[in-house]
Image 1 (cartoon, protein in one colour):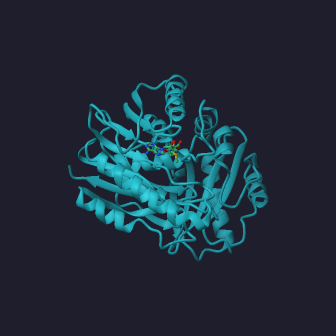
Image 2 (cartoon, rainbow, N blue to C red; image 1 turned 90 degrees about the horizontal axis):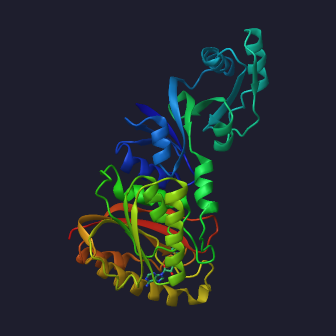
Image 3 (cartoon, rainbow, N blue to C red; image 1 turned 90 degrees about the vertical axis):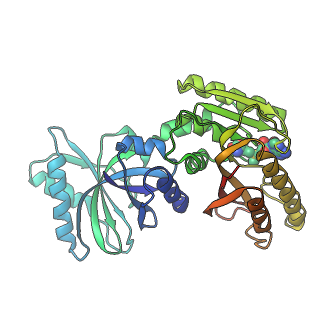
Length: 374
Ligand SMILES: C[S@@+](CC[C@H](N)C(=O)[O-])C[C@H]1O[C@@H](n2cnc3c(N)ncnc32)[C@H](O)[C@@H]1O
């Protein structure tokens, strides 16, 4: 089935995730909307992905030149089909081409009344209702997607379960917000970049800088059933174990895990893993800019030591997705020399690095993907 997918606030990362998991030919029709083909149901799609907020079904494609009245007729026709016996709760979102006038929902309601259809609409933003509203209310949301070439009329058919994401984010017993935590949706996207469309039954996934366990939590959510973590900080290992125990119980999941109190540069395991997904130590979140060079040199050494040690832990063909820090105010402090060195010990870079960072943050995350030759 062809879907349009509404992407979250890191659209490039979301698109890479869709290409890895659903459809390597997925293409952006707008910066925030991608078109992809998948055999999964809409709910399966949105439950699997971290970077997609809504799944939209294509109702029809039209020339962009239509006047506002013709567009309203298209919408009314669609709502006529959707209206059942009860009152229709509707919304019309407009995505792309912000300069176009907003569709007047009151006029739509009046026209529907003239047709004998009782209706009401919810107030919302131009780009559509929030996931929370769509999840908790029965609303028919149509979306006018203005691409460069055409107008695509779509209907929202699945939405991210924001309640479950919030539960994992806010209610897990252990957090280490001061040290920095990976947003869970980014953790999910990283896991998905690593595992792609592989069968998950035999997957073993390692995070050697586990922190609070964000990557392993999201790996468990998609069905990976053997998870390994390590951290140099004993509190983090205890906390991550507690989080994984909690996840298993509250989300009723089946998986095994081991969490070691060890330095990633010396970690030793009895088994080899086929996936490594991690956000290592990135230095302070608000570093002293004058001392960054020093921090950078320390991290370069830590990453090199860790990647050298990982060669003993990874199975041939293992996929590795790791965050490297970047400091937007000091672009010359990049890790390209280290990345080159990694290719000499078996790591092949398999994707352009993808950036993730809050606006104006002093430290940005760059997500790199490698395949390990073994
Ligand atoms: C940025 S945090 C990871 C946060 C994690 N992704 C999360 O969402 O909770 C980095 C972690 O690396 C750990 N760490 C630092 N140096 C380490 C080393 N040499 N070996 C293993 N862990 C280390 C820190 O204790 C910290 O918990």
